[in-house]
Amino acid sequence: MSIRFDGKVALITGAGAGLGRAHALAFAARGAKVVINDFGGSRDGTGSSTTAAQAVVDEIRKAGGTAIANGANVADPAQVQAMIEQTMAEFGRIDILVNNAGILRDKSFAKLQAEDFKLVLDVHLNGSINCSKAVWDIMRAQQYGRILMTTSAAGMYGNFGQANYGAAKMALIGLMNVLSVEGRKNDIKVNTIAPVAATRMTEDVMSPEALQRIQPERVTPGVLYLCSEQAPTKVILGAGGGTFSTATIMETAPVHLTDAELTPEGVAARFPQIADWSTARAYAEVLEQVQVFLAPAA
Ligand code: NAD
Image 1 (cartoon, rainbow, N blue to C red):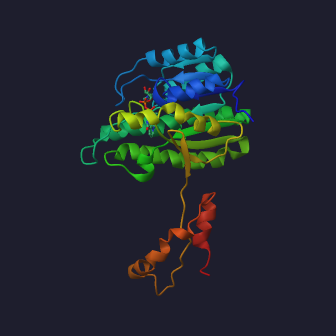
Image 2 (cartoon, protein in one colour):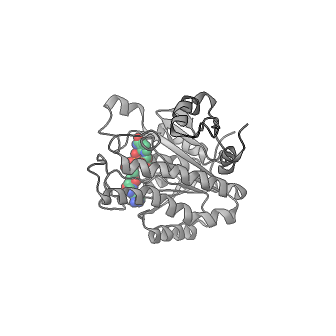
Image 3 (cartoon, protein in one colour):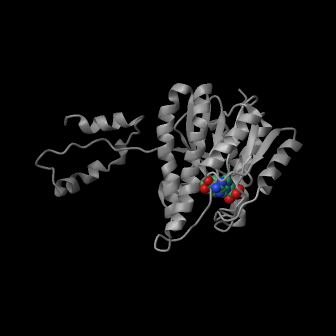
């Protein structure tokens, strides 16, 4: 049951370096025609160059694969639209979109400026929205599509100094949840990877030994599975160093308070039961969850 991408077209944003580059090389090695998007800026999003994207294209072509370079800034809807038009003109379809491009502007919330929020939200969140929106109708018409978001444990669990990044990364999970519901009838599967990898984003926060163990290539097999024909949908896959996990949002069993208990003190008194995680479950869709609150107390 080998996973191949022959005849498929994969667009990977931020594929000039790090994780995106590793994903792109692997898609190409398994038969995909690949669009290597990279704006080519520095880690904080300043500057731009198409050198990095072109170098990955050259690497793929040298190995016998098919790839084109694109230097669009994913935060700019017009540039994204032009990238999609370039892809359609070159390859005629888009089956896979990996939203991977990212930047960092780490500072404590006290020091973060509005511009730091805007830039980080623009690249991670609006960039993923722009690209997903631009391929959506194409995938719907094809009755096939695979979209991947790239989140981070910094958003899922919290990390000092990353309020802008954490907010953007967690928003992508909301985007995945809704797109996976809306894409279901057209065989569009939408998933999220939560990677840990040695790249320029992490090179100064981990030891050389740790970095050695978490090369980006050790995340990529999870990405290829989530973008394959047999992909699940609405999955958050943790991946790093060859280790994988899944994460989900869960809710504890509902606790109905009597009218007499319906006071702040009543909530406080029942809080240990309300927050008892041994009863937790996930919901497939919002209506399932809302029903719990509409149902009369048992
Ligand atoms: P990286 O800096 O090596 O790669 C990011 C790439 O995105 C760069 O090549 C950069 O030029 C490109 N890029 C930045 N802004 C862009 C824009 N506006 N348009 C197009 N391209 C743009 O970092 P990485 O670690 O490989 O990061 C890849 C993704 O993984 C990011 O979304 C990042 O937030 C996420 N991530 C990484 C880690 C990790 O441990 N490395 C952990 C959690 C999440």
